[in-house]
Length: 196
Image 1 (tube, rainbow, N blue to C red):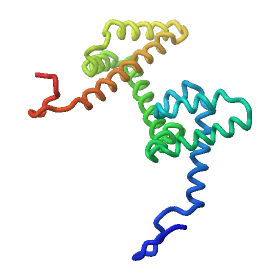
Image 2 (cartoon, helix red, strand yellow):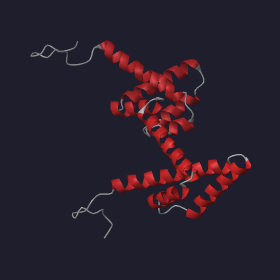
Image 3 (tube, rainbow, N blue to C red):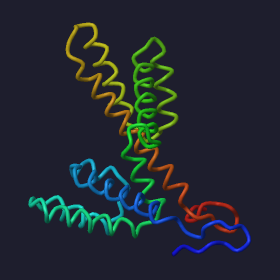
Image 4 (spheres, rainbow, N blue to C red):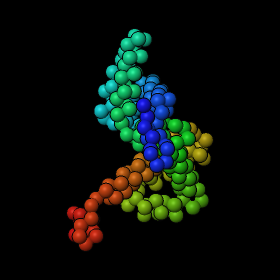
């Protein structure tokens, strides 16, 4: 029986129907996770403690046993914080924040590649190398030259795609370095620790 607040008259906990709806939502999320490949699961922010349960459920083929195992998986998932479940749902949704960020990153890389292959390619290369001083200049310039040659000769866009992959790797390396720098603690002077 749910209690009521003496002053406001509001219920202190969610109704049984609301609890059941929440449990069924988690069960449905568990079924979706079980239906995913290992690569798809790897892209989701799934806690390490949950992965063995997902893999165990994927291995079971018997209908009744699988249904019980999915229910057990949902029980384990209900132990997680709502924030963790919301992060998994967001990463899975096509219009979620993670998908929007990934799409925006792809568009940035495509625009950078187009700028490198455009009329102002030298300026774009200078800006790129200033932003990423550890980048392999010679390799990037060679990829740009090869992409121009491919266009002239109407060849398949091999270097064009390779340039995209190289720029994507640079962006990923730059984002990882930025995350590492943001995570370093500051000493008393306000400088990053480990630096003089």
